[in-house]
Length: 360
Image (cartoon, rainbow, N blue to C red):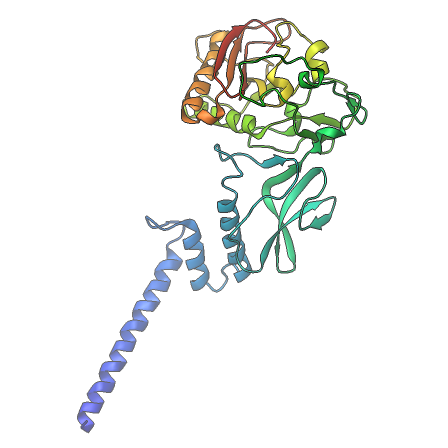
């Protein structure tokens, strides 16, 4: 190559480098000045990572790792959060919650009373935590609740808490038109204390919402509660919200009932001897956003009546049509001394509808 040709090649290469540098500087300036405007199709996580690559005081690599970990955990917990996506606990006899595809160097652990273990052995509420290197941090709003086995009940009691005996234990079932096992003994009990009763089981509900209303001075209490009921309740609330009903004031009037309470506790008129409340998959609820202790005027007809409970029943019908695996009972009840109208919802395994004046 001639000396003149070599100079021309050098000038061309220099010009190309200057053009690339100008384009890079423009790109960085554009990202920094974009502010909170996220281009169409760009996720907030992608924007955070881009900003971190172009801003000197951006979040650290550890922060970006946390973003990746959180995203992976949420993907892995999707099934554990139920059809509603709003469950905050898994209830089981024992075992772990499966979280797969975590970033390298990250593992799942469980914490109770300050102790961190690889597997949650024994009954109680275990916080799900992640071990990232030497650091341990909790998974936001998700716990594993291990039950006491049913065999812990002796002579009708677990500890000092009197529960009674299920119909299956008494040989009182007889032939029933119900799925096999629907009236069998529950697998175990959740131990509820004054300290853990506010533990969330979903977006709207806590353990304490479902306790039997008896033996006020006896602690701990013991609870039977099925996840599919909580999931169904959350789906019903989501459906109501989609139809313009404010559900923030949802209240559980009656959740789990021990067999002894179902027979003789509180207002017993209208109670079924094989009430689903004894099996942890039934709840009587109403919406009380104005906190006056009774159902709100959900249909906006200017009065409180059983028709407001029917608004919730319509939501139950829609949920069961979309999720037949959660089919069950829905009974609307009129007001009675001590309470306003309400609705009973359960997941008994077959469709049932009724209207009543009390009980549930």
